[in-house]
Every structure is written in C-alpha cells, then in structure tokens.
Length: 238
View: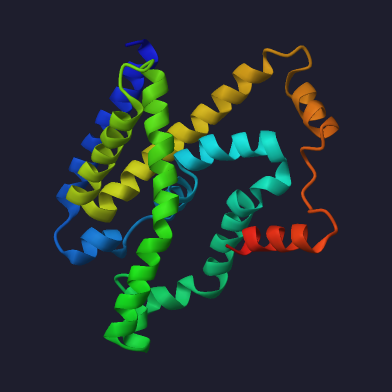
C-alpha cells in the first residue's frame, strides 16, 4: 500500500475522529438533527458545499465535461447551484422561522401526517441515485489508491461504514464539522491537481483552455431542435 493510500486511510480515520468528537456536543434531538441551530455561517457554507459537491461531483463532472462539454453538465453543477440560490432566496428564511426539524415536518403542519410520510418516502427514493453515485465514486477512489489491494465492492462498503460511523454517532454536528474539514481538503486537492496538470504542458493552463475551446467543450446551449432543448431544460430543472 503506497503513501497515497496511507493518506486516504488517515483522512478517513480523522473524519471518524472528528465525528466522534462532535458527538460530545449532542444533548438533544435538535442538536442531533440541526446542530442546535447554532452553526456559524462559514461552517454552514462548508456543509452545503461539501454535501452538494462531493465525490460524485469531483470525479463524475470532469469526466462528463470531457465527453460532452458544458452542456453535458447542465444538471450539476449549474442546475444544482441555481437550486441552492433559488431555495435560499425564496424558501430558506421562511422555513427556518417555522422551527422545523425536517422538511417532512412542514408537510405535516401544512397538510397531514399522511402527506408527511408520503413526501418523506418520495424524498428518500429520489436520493437513492445521488447517494449511490457518491458511494461508487468513494469506493473507486479507495480501490484506485490502494492499487486494487481493496476490491471495489469492499471499498464501497468501507466508505459507507466510515461515513455512517460519524453520522450516526454525532448527527448534524458531526456532519457539519467533517464537511468543513472535507471542503478544505477538496479545494486544496483540486488546486493541487490543476497545478500539476497545467505544469505538464508548455503553455500551462492557457493551452488546456485553448484545446478545450477548439474542441467545442465550452458550448453550453443545446442544438436548436425540440429534442435537444427538452433534454437540456429537463436536466437543468431536475
């Protein structure tokens, strides 16, 4: 097992450790689910960032961009990013003032217990694909950095166990603090990769950007036909 694999193992151990440490701040259900409604703004930003742009985004979006260009990633990050802004502008403040524990609570207050259960089930089902993508990407990373010493399927299981360990024990406090740590790692890693890749070309980043532009990778809007437009809009609003 190489040095990179040891760093990944250390990263997982630190994440679990942070989660267990954060668990000491959990004293009631509000602490567990909402971190006591007392997260500072920079931790909240980190939590949103790390939650929406995790392993699936870091590994999946670049691969899709290489194959399809900007119009291929309209759903994520463009649609996802606008969704966050939209919710923040029109819904977040009003929902926060209602002192809800989960989004399902809103539907119980507004309609009934039955509607709450149905909506909550629908939300859980809708998240299966997204969560699955995170698990696959995390397992792929562990499998690659260990040079197949850990099989892909086992790597996915280990990744899930690590995340579940600190989430179940520490709730939102654990998630928020580990997200802040993970955001720093993600941004630092992306800048490091960008620098290493750019340094391999004589023209640096400018050459890479020029190559992408010449191959029409920065074309964002769909072709002017009904099928392409509907597919584009559908992906954007998903």
